[in-house]
Length: 263
Ligand SMILES: [Zn+2]
Image (cartoon, rainbow, N blue to C red; front, side):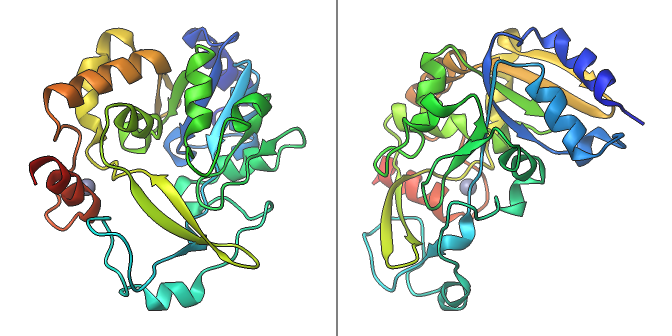
């Protein structure tokens, strides 16, 4: 069984103690951890200077009956989901799709959270990054983190959950989407919604020389500088505007990007 001390000792090998990071995690990937998910959260917090994670809340999303064309969505098809949508509130738990670690971080006594109704971020020592989020630029916190020479930390997960690649897609001029979210008193438009991330592992070979990699328990842990990731991802998309898309034939957002590129 892994302990806090063993995790912290292993993470020190990444050399991130003076770095601000955005992390993505699978707690299950680590195997048994003494003290549970809290031990992992505290070990990561004590291994970096600032820790941010996505605290996304997909259950606020509403799909209207009509909207802009080629938007990677089937209008009018989600009436059942619409009726189950919940209005965003600042204390809404993070979506379980992201695992339990973001929710444990959100509940940390020193954690703050931004207020985007679908794509909020949470973390400790990250106030200035959270403040960079706007409705027009939901991934602004990632941009701000990159400007502060931040890193990405993948804890037992791969690039298919690496949200920062979405910001590089935006920088490369790739099509962004519009979504809608429920607030307690109204529905708001949420522009700048990113595409699908299922094809993102194709970036891994391009980052090999810039990736720090260790094993902690059963989990592979990788760290990549954000600015390197941005420049490599932009280069890949510039060379091939269809790069990093997934192969699923019915993927609405990847197909919408193809249509935007190929016409
Ligand atoms: Zn796709």
